[in-house]
Amino acid sequence: AAGVIQSPRHLIKEKRETATLKCYPIPRHDTVYWYQQGPGQDPQFLISFYEKMQSDKGSIPDRFSAQQFSDYHSELNMSSLELGDSALYFCASSLSPGTGGVLAGNTIYFGEGSWLTVV
Amino acid sequence: GEDVEQSLFLSVREGDSSVINCTYTDSSSTYLYWYKQEPGAGLQLLTYIFSNMDMKQDQRLTVLLNKKDKHLSLRIADTQTGDSAIYFCAESPSNNAGNMLTFGGGTRLMVKP
Image 1 (spheres, one colour):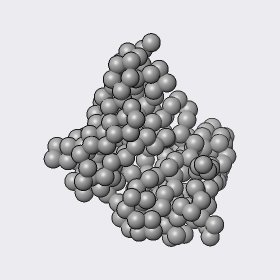
Image 2 (image 1 turned 90 degrees about the vertical axis):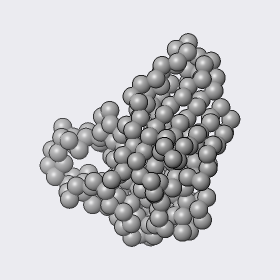
Image 3 (image 1 turned 60 degrees about the vertical axis):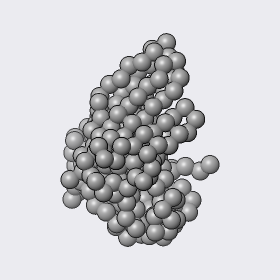
Image 4 (image 1 turned 135 degrees about the vertical axis):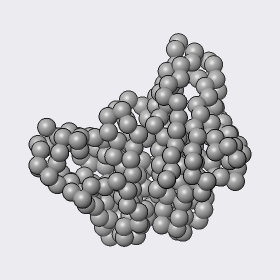
């Protein structure tokens, strides 16, 4: 079965550079989430989109922005990178409960993650 | 705000049962999940439970939910070395636009042969 696809899998950037991560959700999933997992830490919610509109916002820095496109893929743009931005960035997707019903809306699937290293 | 807590480490012998515990504080939690993360890998959804359920069983996995005590557990029967990983519990209040997850700190399960 198709899973959540993230690219690139690994990325090395210098401080103050910009980076863009891409996420392709599972087909027919209308909701996309971005999480950041620092070394040895649990994943922290950054932001989510439902039907191309931002639905929830977590601990996303102002230097980061994201959007969801008409084909439901999403991009996370990170500017003025700092050393502390080095982390594993996960994208996840699901059907929203409003779209797929209660039972369909609770299955959230994660991609393999994109490793960002800022040097 | 939401808070999800787990013990950091669990060590068991191959063939034994493992029980990983999780407590949460948000009484509005609607869905509770268990994810498995192997080293350098992504988060694999193992199972989930809806808040109106007490128990859910799926092959070697049994999830128990005590909503009164806000306590969730994952039991892995006949634990194998391939089960060694970090296990995260997560909760979500759910809304029409999607499910924002709050994760616990993860429990590192080590299975000894």
